[in-house]
Image (tube, rainbow over all chains, first blue to last red; front, side, top):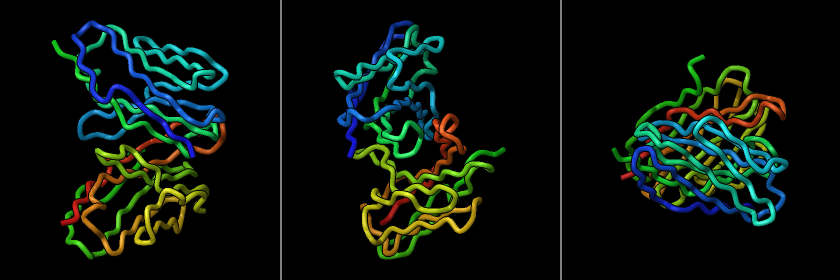
Length: 113
Length: 116
């Protein structure tokens, strides 16, 4: 089955700096890659996603890049704010949908003042 | 819509007892997922249903775990007998029909299970 690795497990940045979280996946047939944000004690929520036919997608301060050849994708957050502090999960899907999502182990992002 | 509703929010039980977790998906969603979250293993998909039918239960750890979806608005995850290593947060999620729409899993608030 699919295996998703995520790094780093923790990340601390100063407010205003950029944060980058990287994931690799094992199955080259995976075609859908969402990112979920989970605030402390709350539910995971989708923040951005990308399909395998796209190399980059941006939504305001967040962007995701995908390198199919290398089988890795990354989340970029610019101009970080304290409310960006949360655990971020990458995921990969073979079905192109939310079915059969394989999640990474998460990155705890701390944005300090 | 109130979103995906799970109950109970917290459950503490003794080893060997039966535990039943409940989930009400968002109305109109025809995919339902059960996930388990632990520090060590992160978010793991246990089982998912489409139109009340179990599609993939390969993530269910053992025969002690079972899940049902008797109708479109209700699902249960049962652990019998429970063990301390089952302690985790269990999330239910649902997703709307249609390939173009079925790209977001809407999670419930989760049930924090502690088995002592």
